Structures are given as C-alpha cells and as structure tokens.
Image (cartoon, rainbow, N blue to C red; front, top):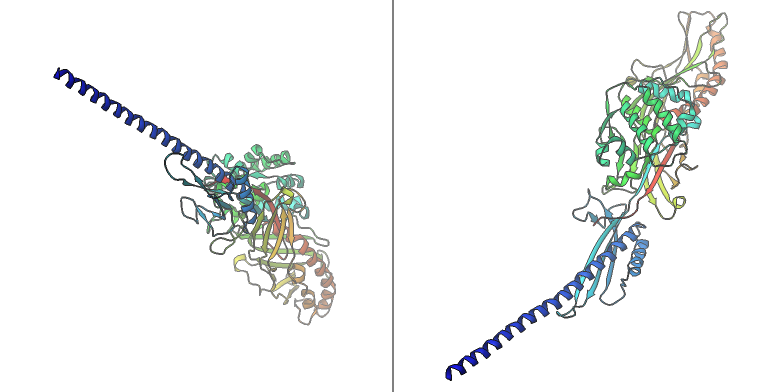
Length: 571
C-alpha cells in the first residue's frame, strides 16, 4: 500500500515536471516567434528605408549642382512620393551634395562634400521602428550615394568652309606620307560624323575605357579603328555613308610608318584623347569627330620632326606661287571630361592648341626693271611665325531640361604668336627673327633686301567665355574667339610697307647702272602689292593653322557634345 502511494506521487511529480518543461519550451518558441516577427519587421523597415534612400539620391543626382538647392528639393520630394515623410516625428532625411571621385576621395564611399564640380548626392534617411513584443522602438538608418556626370567634348579647330579640299589633302599627305585626293564633301562628312568612346572601346577590343586609353596603335591602325567605329556606331549621323566612304579611302591609302601612338594623352607623352572624369567609364557616350582624330593623329606622328611642306593649296589674287612649311613642336589635344577645377585649382578638362613653327614664302608679280627682259625676277615675301599654345577649358555644364536647354560654358585663352619677315633658315629650329628678308634676287645683277624685318608679336586675347547648347550638329557648334587688338597677321605687318617706303627701308646692291632709280620704282610697285598679299595671307593662313589646332590671332572652338549621364548608385 505504501509502495503504491509512493509510486503515484512520483508519477504525478513526473507529469508536473514534464508539463513545466513543455510549457517552458512553448514559451521559448512563442518568444522566438514574436521576436522573429519584430526582427522581420525591423529587417523589412530597413530594406524599405534603403529603397527610399536609393531612389531619393538617384533623383537628386539628376539635377545636382554647386548650390544643391534643387537637388535637395527633388530628393526630398522623391522620398515623400515613396512613402517617407521627414516631417513625421522620429523620421529624418539629410541630403548633401558633393563629389564622387575614386582618385581624390577615400574608399569605400569615394564621396566628399569638397571638390569641384559637384557630381553626387548623398542621402541619409532615419526612421523610428517600434518593436511589437520585444521592448522599446529602434532607429533604422539607410544611406545612399548616387552620381551623375555631365561630360563635355570639345577642341580648338576650324570649319571646312574657309579651306579648300586641295589644302586639306596637301596637309594630310605631308603629315601622313600618303597621296589622298578626297573631295570637300568627303572631308565635310568626316567632320560632321561622330563616334562614341564606347564605339572605340568595342572596335579596339578593349574591355574598358582605361584599357582603350592604354592602347598603342600606328597611324594606319588608328584610321582603321575610326572606320570600324563608324561602321558600328549607334550615333545618328546624317552623313554616315559619306564618312565611311572617306575613311575607307584613308585606310586604303596605306599610311606608312611603324611609330605607335597612345590613344590616351599623358604628360610628356602626347596621345589622341585627354579624358578627365572621376570614372572613365562615364565617358562611354561622349563623342568625337573622326576628322579631328585623324588630324591630331597625323600631328602626333610628325611632332618633333623636320618641317614639312603643306602649302600646295594657297591661292591669292596676284600671287604666282606659295609654299608653307610647318613644324609641329607640340600637337593639340582633344578634350573630354567634367567641368570645373580640381583640388589643385587647375581646370579639370582642357583642350590644348598646337605649338607650331611656320614659314611662308610667296612669289608675287614680276619686278618691272628697265633694261631687263624676260624672265623677270619675282618679288618674294618670306614670313616666319612661331605660335605658342593656348588652351580651352570646360568651366561649367548644365544638364537641366532637353538638349536645347542644356548649356556648357567653355573658356578660351589664345596663344601668343611671333611673326617676322626674313629668309628661310637651314633649320627652322634655329630661325632668328633678326634675319633680313630677300625680296628680289637676280644673281650677279641685283639683290634687294629689306631691313624692315622687325618682329611683330601678336598678343593673346583676354580669356573669353563661350556658351554652347546641348544639341550636336547645329549652328552653334563652332564659335570664334575674337582676336585681341592688333592680333592679326595683316595688322602685325601693316607697318611693313611704311618701313619699306622709308629712307633705308630697302637695301639695293648689284651691278645695274640704274640703281638710283630702282629704289623709287620698287617702292611704287611693292607698296600696293604687299598690302594686298598681307591682307590675303591673314585670311588664308589662319584657317590652315587652326586646322592644325594652332591659334593665330582669332581662334575657333568646336563643341562636339555634352553628354548628360543618367544617375547611378555609387554607394
């Protein structure tokens, strides 16, 4: 009996213990389930808040500028439209504009509120999330950084309307060693066409823009690269078939030489393209002109070499013949990049003009000398020019609205030019502006030189700002920079006639018995002739030199494209 009671009590205690254990287990399960609900709600709230921050930053980045006012307004509006109201207690939204730059700023965000230009928006959203079962509420924070880059592409060049196809053929043939005979229509097709940097990446078989810039090609291979890019480009080109036909002719011209040229420009190593953006992949949609790329390639190939004769197409009223020799000291640079200055105060994106030496020798009307029959000696006018490089830079870019409403502002500083009258030297690199000019040379009978070979320096223009819209191919793509006072070839040499007419302006030597009357006859003959030639040379030479990317007096800026990239999440 006692044994049975003891067994019953043990059995009841065992049941009670099992029930307590089971209750504890169920309690743990219940708490875990309730905790899971709270944690799941917290996770969902954080994920939702991150989506709000991402969308808000992306919206603000599309209109980012230095003031940040519009970016804040748009970012705040986006957050509210996606269910986040910063005015609700426990909620907060911080919107900051700055610069995203992998080179200037620290990882992992690469974002800083300093730096120019602003190209990114950082959004930090905070929301208070209540716990239903596990205690007080928690604050959840989400941060997003979105960037949007406006990229300008431009150069210093000239329109083809002011230069004939013959001169352009002579120029390229001299620089490339070819025998091209393209029409002006063909060249205009190349000038009007555009290819994307992304087209060049694909045509070169490069994986990234950086790999493209590191590529080394010969001039012939660069021409082939441009042809392949034209054949596959997605850019709408009205003259695409003409451009492809013209570039095919250039490729088939078999450009000689094994010298390789870098596609990316670096200090001390001239290259075809200068791309200045925080992330070079952002430049994929920027465009360039195949003709300008071909010209810059030709100049890089000739840089530092002996002068070449490029003046076969020079024509002027009263001019019998003309030669133009050009030596490329430093080639120009095509610029692609962002606006504004870098951390060192330098303009971030600059197009450099060429530095050249040029020698012109024109032969004008025969000299009417008494007692001298045919052939009469020609009157020569030898000129020498040294053109120092200038530059153009992208000051600002505004991407608000459609292409017609967008604006890019390009600053320009023309280079200095030194113009002299004097004979051609054995080496253009050793030319001295103090050398007298031989106007007439009749061996054994008559030599006439002028002592009026005073150097004439054409000053650089004051820095000028030009504004372009975002439409490619319209009337504002080419804009001239007005010449500084006195900065023209004709004006620089306007005193030559007066110097010749002045006493001792001409030095006449020879065996002719009529030397006393020769000087007066020469003055009467040379004064109107040289005046006409000098004025004409100003109009003929400047476009040729600008085609080489050299500025003399006035200059022409060519805006190629303004690419307004869609915003991308960066962090």
